[in-house]
Image (cartoon, rainbow, N blue to C red; front, top):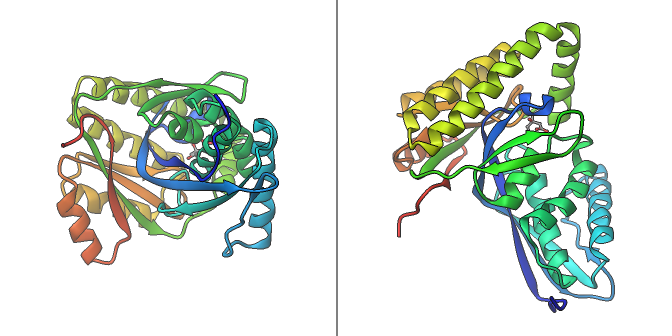
Length: 310
Ligand code: MEV
């Protein structure tokens, strides 16, 4: 493929984890799907490969983004393009915004370099960026964003890489995403859990193993079109996340609100902690979004998988 001349546009989807956050870090499966919201990268011709940094970033954030972009430029042969970014996704709340940004940049630079932005290549370049953002993430975020499909993801034991198996849904999977409380940084939540796990390994390993089982059962429920079973798996997963010390009053309150509004299942999604994102699985998400918005809750709905209305 010849290098495509800018202007170019590429999108990276945000993600939600339906089942299996945290235990995925320890090698158990997680079920995650792409949001229709995400990050768009745009490229125009330039003398060298460069990123226009968003003006609202702190100094450490600018340094981190610059370093991450340099990794993507290096991996794609530094095509001469100037990249700008635009997000329609709430940032740093557990919805995979850094992975969305990484996949958008990866796709754009691959195209500018004349390469096909396949999910595999986009994931490879995005992974290099994600390591600048997170250190040692499980890889579920950027894999889901690069595949843009519902995946059952598993990190290969003893490695930092993993694989996502695409899960087909015969039914439309609609979620409502609602924000609650003050978000704790993922690194801190993952680190504190690791300390507890190191102290009481048998108990924590039992809980991680059970969450992994629930995630696999949830994937089978999706494939069978059994949304009630998926919803139940989400509720059980929420209980296990609370047992691991990853929930909090604002998250629990939002979980119960979504269930009260008719969710088949509801749970925190992402890292959890003092606050962040909560998802509810709905057959009809519209009325819940309208009601929550009226109450001043930041929320939106997204279809993660399945046939779309025409
Ligand atoms: C990432 O969105 C959620 C965690 O499982 C961390 C990871 O997978 O790297 C908490």
